[in-house]
Amino acid sequence: MRSKLVAGNWKMHGSLTENEALLGALLKGLAAGPVSASLCAVCVPFPYLSQVQALLRSSRVEWGAQDVSEHAKGAYTGEVSVAMLKDFGCRYAIVGHSERRMLHGEDDGLVRRKMMAVRGQGLTAIVCVGETLAQREAGQTESVVGAQLDALAADGGVGALGRSVLAYEPVWAIGTGKTATPEQAQAVHAFMRRRIAMQDDGVAAGLRILYGGSVKAGNAADLFAMPDIDGALVGGASLDANEFLTICRAAAALQ
Ligand code: PEP
Image (cartoon, rainbow, N blue to C red):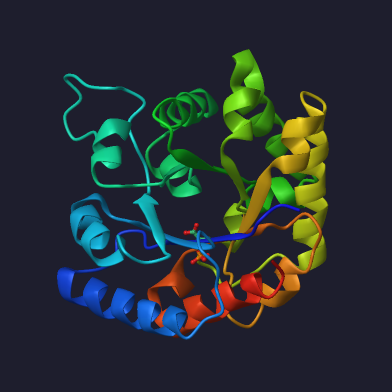
């Protein structure tokens, strides 16, 4: 059975003071149990990695970044390498988030190279795919998500994919309050697993596929009950300790 993962994506939110309060409340809540090791993680803005490492290093919560460079080092002003994330104890790096794809023009090839770079240093990429509202309404969800997955798996990428975590994030559900129904999400997750199985059955069976898009305390349990939903990538609700804790507990209940 695949273990669940609930990863928070703080996006460009937080301050030293707010982070300390948020993580303090999260750790206090987790101490009351019952959430197992490695079930929850937070992906934070780069400047706060040092603070988050100090606050979480002796806890059961893991941490990571929201993006990373495809390059190892060099003249790439403003970029942050995987090795730098490793220096700060990161376990995860999100790659291919729809906000990076849309606002920063990141394409499937770049997302794949970032995934490979993350894997190359032994970290775990959380690789996001998903369709826009227009694509869903045009009946293109499977062709869009299928093409994104094929690009990730190309040129031997399926091995790196097998050591990554996938996140299905329908763009129309991110930060909008519109969640995919558990059935809608399950249908796409099952499709994704079938698509990867065309390349490698073993990778497909073991691959954790998170759902992301307005996951909240109130809808997490129903989503997690679906057989191909292995956890969540949580934006807004990860900024509220009680909401995030409730989502983590809903996942823990199904471990
Ligand atoms: C996200 O940022 O990846 C996300 C899913 O955001 P939200 O939960 O706020 O929709």
